[in-house]
Image (tube, rainbow, N blue to C red; front, top):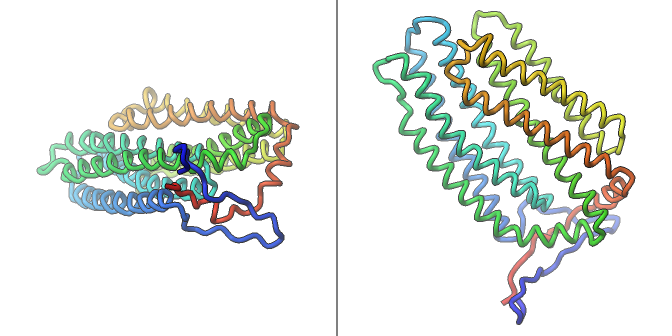
Amino acid sequence: MDGDGILQPVTLSRHNSTSPKKQSFIPRNHWAKLALGVAFAQCIIACILEFYILITNQSYLASIDFPNPIDKGKATALLGYYILFLVAQVYQLLLLMDALMQLSLIQLVTTTTFNWLFFGYSIVQYFQAAGIVVPLLTPNPHPTKTMEILLSVVMLFFAVSGSFLCWKLYYVFGWTTYKELGADITVRNVLYLYHIYILLLKLDVFFFFSVQFQFIFLNVQPGTNFSPAVNMIVSSIGALGLLILAYFAVRKESQYLVYGTLVAFVVGIGYLFTNLEKIWFSQKVLYSSSKNSFTLLIIATIILSVVTMAVAVLNMQKFGQGLINRLASTTTVIDEESHAFEVRR
């Protein structure tokens, strides 16, 4: 820190030589190191707790003689919620690692928000398990209650910790982002929109496949008709194709591909609305114990899809303003020293 109390970076540089220095996987900045360590700790601790809850509940439910297949299907659906939570912990770690490697302030904030959402999901999970297991009037309903409460407390701790580290890293990423995007306002706006769009696609991947995954667990049980699973696997492949199309549409600045992406998103949103109809009307008995959390997940996916479409259109309006050339010029590897922020005292 200089005499005026201004925070200054030590060194920020890019190597443009023919043999650029490789970026270190472990960032040199102490706040970035701490953020990476906290993300790893969250992934490990939350997965251990969730896996214990999964094993305990599944072992307990396996010993119950269910009065009808519907109740058994509801109990089996818990496995889907647990696995989704486990995948989310790995996904938050990957998002955080990518944010540190790309020095992306936007992705860092999104990762923090993602953790708060799954703190909320951990609370919903408690009531979801209680709503499925307790009504069965078993001798020991909801045996994982204590561990589920502990998991929510742990997730709250990591959400608060992540928010604090996000605030600290803002000063690191803010300056680096400015250096990367440059002072040209037009080019900077184009790149901001592009980075936001790519981030939305990363979130689309998680939410799209989370919806499909849970539908498979709710619709397919051992010894039953597997046609719903086949339909959902096909739709999952379609969703993957949509996301690939959406990426190249903007990356290659193709208006035709953007129009195709918008049409595909509309079809996907229509598919999600048909699933909402099943949950609340035509198949409401099957989804009676999980309709609230499942509805929230689908609505979140629909909102995210609409936002992605809007940002795709905004990106299309910026075509021809230097995006392709700018991306090509920033493919050099970021030096380790770009992580080396410190306070001069």
